[in-house]
Length: 103
Image (tube, rainbow, N blue to C red; front, top):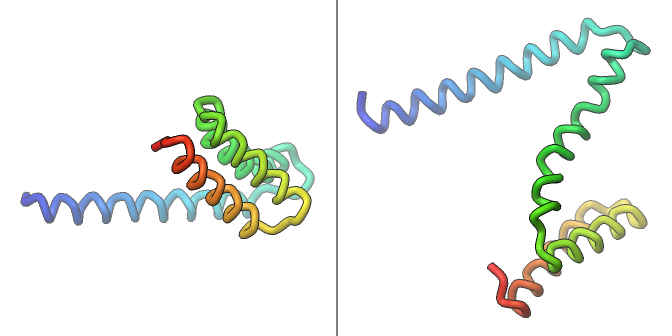
């Protein structure tokens, strides 16, 4: 099998796995009744997944990154504008990288 065909096979397998897992989640989620413990668990899973990805990054963050995260979080909390929070956090990260020579 050539490198190109191996790449296409890998992409096809990843696509099939993602599709099957999402379909399985949909089918499983649609059978769970409202008000049950399992339904409440399913409702908090997206937040838990985000926290599991973000928490290690926060632990290893540099001071400039912590300030950018704090400012973006506060803006998101008070304005509920995702775009404003993301833009301000990114702007602080870029400015901090240029000022302090990070990255």
